Image (cartoon, rainbow, N blue to C red; front, top):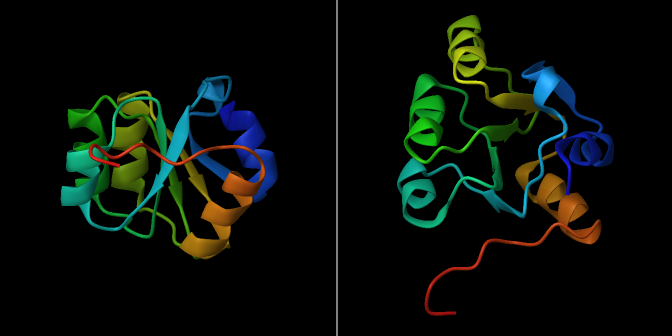
Amino acid sequence: MLLKEAKEILDAEILAGEEYMGREVKAAFSCDLMSDVLAFVDDKVLLLTGLTNLQVIRTAEMLDLSNIVFVRGKRPNEDVCRLAKEKKMVLMGVRHTLFEASGLLYKSGLGAIEIEGE
């Protein structure tokens, strides 16, 4: 799925990286625990989270992950957006809960990540 398609499905606001909306993602992962993100996610994933701090950007940077959706109407501060722009990341914000946003994307054909051992 292209990020611009995900934006439309979620009725998202682009907070950073509008020029990268043509990127493709192969799956989504919804999580607020960055330790789980480190354990399970790779670079072609759309991360949905309620965390809006610099730790999210730093975690994403370690994984070459560059696509993040903030849920529940949460907005990162300017420092987070500035760092994301420097790292060529896409940040979007939505009013949906984590559950709703995940369901909308799944219903539209974006699958979940595969966890080893499943």
